[in-house]
Image 1 (cartoon, helix red, strand yellow):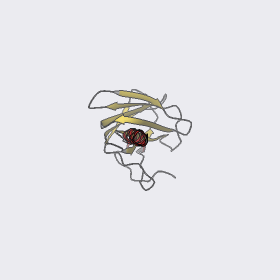
Image 2: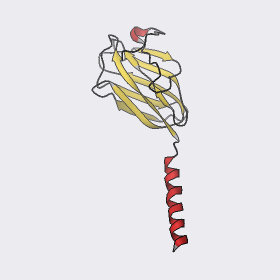
Image 3: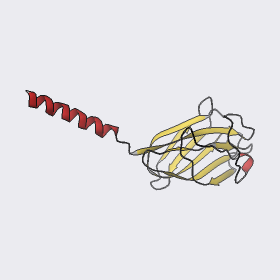
Image 4: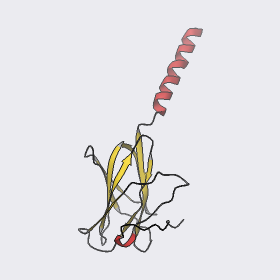
Length: 146
């Protein structure tokens, strides 16, 4: 009886440890217009450039979005909203357990117009600086409003 109990506990612990292993990453962030106003209802297409897999999500009422449980690999994000140019961000590499923060800014214009930004996304976390790229600029080093 004692051996059966120990074996049962060992099996439960092994199962719990295997469930705790993280094998994916997360991409999250915010969508704003060029004036800094949040954009609810922006459609974001997140594409794994290695596999071609895509996920389509929508920003919430505060302009935030999150795509958890993404396979590791190289990603591109496309954000669009009626009355605004499509923004494309590439150069995002997810590794196991990584939380990449990708904030996007959309400029007024037609959806068929694209603003493409290439660059690595910062790691997520409380101590990370987050940058928006407004008005089609290639680089804008101002920190986002807190």
